Length: 47
Length: 149
Image (cartoon, rainbow over all chains, first blue to last red; front, side, top):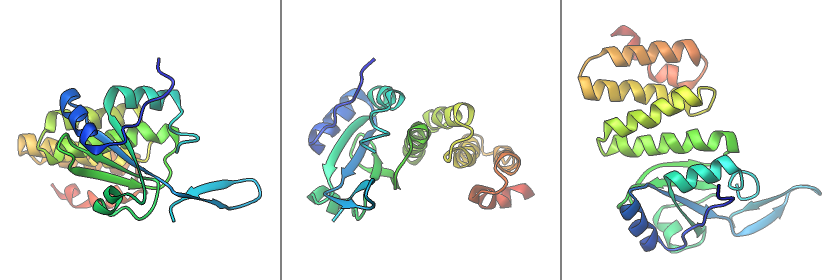
């Protein structure tokens, strides 16, 4: 079993793969900045 | 998501088998095109890149698969592909009945039943199922008119 999956970074390529493999696309947006919320916990949030 | 949910082995297996994952920066042009203002934002697109569902906020590993299945079911529903939509919905209902996605899955299962048979029975059955199993959620209220069928 694979231990991770590989994110595509290009929409055109994702659509090509989606069409070829007949699978929906999961589009995720990752955050840009880190905010220290407490001494122990950091959350990544968008700017 | 990247620290807890995406490394989960069941999530990895599900994504590899079911989806084409793409991750873009929240300040990219694509984020503007999709009007993304907060993360995590997860969007299900069809093979043409058209959006069919989105969720905003953290999703725990145990909720990830039913949440994605619901998004995929909505994609099939939008495309009038009712058989694969029902397959996704029944997987949620049977395998993840405790999940946040389950009551909505029961609702759409009833709607798909109506769409394919043009009989009112599936809608009433959906209401009764939701009222029994999920009496305090929003979907029992959304299905409320079907009690009269």
